[in-house]
Image (cartoon, rainbow, N blue to C red; front, side):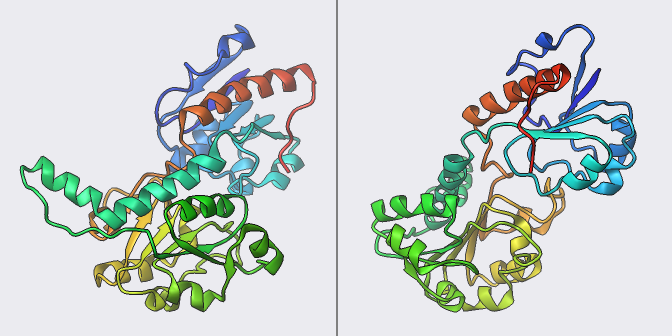
Length: 314
């Protein structure tokens, strides 16, 4: 049985689980770089493919070329880059691991990006390493307005922290109810008010055809001068060209963990944008999450091979 473990960027997958427990007949190969256009050729002989979240897309066209594939294991309970229906139509079992620390890890990173942008930490870090001293004047979160686009599981995690910082919290989403806002003690506002009235807007929305580009030129133009946009959800929620224009004009700043294309291309203009704090999709990348992901992969493969129940992806 040939097993491919994809996108092991940190090269830790082999050490975080007991792959030898699968026996001598299991050949496990770890890939630490994106497969890109060679994915079909590279994966052609594998019976089992383990995915790290949505790093490697698995559309129907690619799946159709993987005639030996019998099992797909994806980390976390959701993977919108995987065509589950197409996989099952080919007789491929699709299962998932537990979710790790994503609920807390992603929202903690949102605060890290927010604070770094407000205090210009990357710029000051770079200046200090060049032998220079203070050049910027930071801003505090206390007394400012946090606007949450999305008040689901992750968005709700932002609320108590905002209160600890002394922030007012407002929220909007397409399906947000007054009952949900009352439950969390958050003021419900319109989309227009969210962007125009918030000092920081943090996105916590699921990417879908309805939400793609939901933050466009109009929303960015409505933001206060100096406001911060934080995106730890999905890159395509924001019109990237419009965001670049707003950043270049110095009207707003941004803290970004997600992008339209990942990994972010080497020559991408965001890499040199001084008004953006960037991280390489680290939201769920923590020791605790990885300590669940890789052992759960091994457990899923062993269960599937034994004909035992697995956590099937819906």
